[in-house]
Length: 530
Image 1 (cartoon, rainbow, N blue to C red):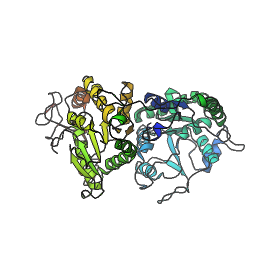
Image 2 (image 1 turned 135 degrees about the vertical axis):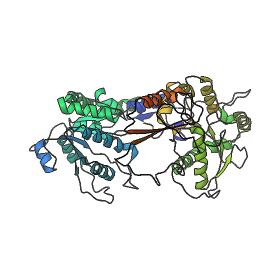
Image 3 (image 1 turned 45 degrees about the vertical axis):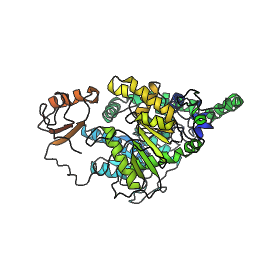
Image 4 (image 1 turned 90 degrees about the horizontal axis):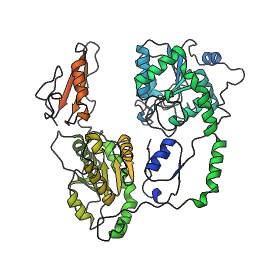
């Protein structure tokens, strides 16, 4: 939902943002950015809800060798990475699509998958491995088929008509445009609640889990209940998502553009007697720091991706130095500690010079972990000015713990005083922060990663049908909100003739969760290690 949160230089010059979904508009508003909703537009001359003269669903299925007696589930979005076609593209959720198909197969439902478009390599391979029948409209190739397998809009329109349902499984989207196309073609559509999906689709045409989607599809195969949404979706597209509708919205916007006030970022102040804005209190060098923040953020993005790519360390040859501010503990310890250790290793492998909790003039950027560092020392240095600080925030702490709102207040007091930019570890965290009225400074989402030297697939034992399924859980906290009751329920209700369950904890959890050095029920737990 937030592929690029407005930050850096653009946020200081843009007076009005154009959002293309209600979700995006709400997110911008929560950040204090004024936004108008002008959504994507569909060419309704192509996707007009009717088949061309001389065409029928029967003839289309014969043309593409699609079984006439099957419930056909279409998906026309790429699923593979361009740089490695054997790997899935996570944003598109092909693994979710696959899980839904596997569950439908397990239920022995009469369905058939219809794929089209370039870079469908991963899903084709997985469907074949799962013995799930499918048709692919295009020319199959082991090489990259982009742009060779891109279909024209007229052909896509026919494919929507040939399918009984179009299934969107994306985890993150600006659109997806397929929702507008399917709705415009008067095809049933079922989607995750991404992008503009909630703006177009009826609530019962949205799903969040693979089993929820499978239940909806099973019911539609049985009684066709999704047909009730066809007219509603079609009318919404024609009312809100055409070039004519957008032309009117832009005309209305331009008529009042002179009255749109010039946007200014809120003033940020350091604690002092004068309470002047930050840029007036510290030396002019910090202006260059804020302008450089996109480079620093990109560096952190690269480091996070590098965590899962083990490589020999090389120190200091990138010409950048970073100081990581955190109360480091010897592993194993909590997730934040493990992340900061992994980040240190990733930076070193990139050739960045890394210090722990160092305050010196030769440090290019300081990365501070929420409130889990020596903030008093850092504040004292900040009053002298010139610090480049990326503030990593997760939580909200009070939502996770059910208490300690004061710690959230401390986080955002530090954020307002010191941050050049804020790194949020997930979209979920960002949404919850906004809901609680907590507004991070110049936020960007960089999701967590793990240390690839520890978590990898090398030497992994292949799955065997003739042994028990192996489950593993790990919890470092004694907070019940971390899932203790769920672990206890699993321990009491698992079919132990089919499952083997391993639970790993810190050794300090209450008895109903404990496993390391103790036992609860049938689950076994080795002692934790680094």
